[in-house]
Image: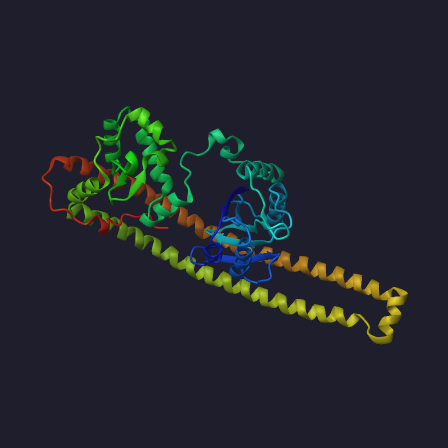
Length: 424
């Protein structure tokens, strides 16, 4: 189970993000502990109000828990992992919220703690929490017999195409796959000995090397979107400079965007738009199936929730009817029969909770199995799209490279974009 944590503020933004259904097919507020409110926004408002009595600005600690895609992980396993993290990071007894998300057939969880100790009005320290989370993650893989990623087994073997949230969001805005972007740029870096060779290799893949702010190396795609070259390579800026020298000889971002706009003829733009339209048509059918499936699954879960609530209330009435009142109830308390009946009721209530939890999990597993079939079709489609996009981007790169010496046409707005996107 991959664990990623961060200290943060802006609890209302986090609450809105965690309960957002646009990016997730299912969202469940699993637990609120230590808060008076019964919703996430109200809970985080309480945490923020308490933090005002301290100097702590990052009053929340947010943790995401992502198990292996192919594994069926019950809420109890998530809860035990959260308890372990809570103990190792010194967050025992702190108010917390647990939210479950399901997206693309995968289930993951988020747990958010308030760092502020209400008794001492101090923030719980979070020293070296990343190292501790890595150790806990490694232990969870070993405990459950899951296949451990190389990057967790040995940090030196981390996947170089991994991306941050900011990189993912930037690529998503452009409709690109961040893994492909990083892989393409890293291939260019590996085959280049100097900046000229790197420039040629990048242009063959539809990228342009330029000078960004603070004398940093950046690259632009054929839509004019700017990416940091060191971040794409997973290196520091000084390491790039040591190999290629200073970037003063490169054109600036605005000048490079103008060059891209000048070279992109209406014909090549039309070619790209046709490819995009083809991708949209192919993915529209699967998108419709996904929407219908999500709607049906949500309705089934809501119906099961309503049914279980009725069953629970009826069983509670039956259990309450066993407990005598008045003189008879007083006599049974004296003889101990009342305590036996109460213990029996509590045991039956616990059995009922476990039974209902098992039913919910079985329903989730069945739905995830159905969703997995559809997700396999999505993956196949995306894989084909990615391969075609790589070939098309290479064609665009070669065209732009060949058109370098042509007479420039009047500059077109880069903001219009090319619309070359990998549909999700």
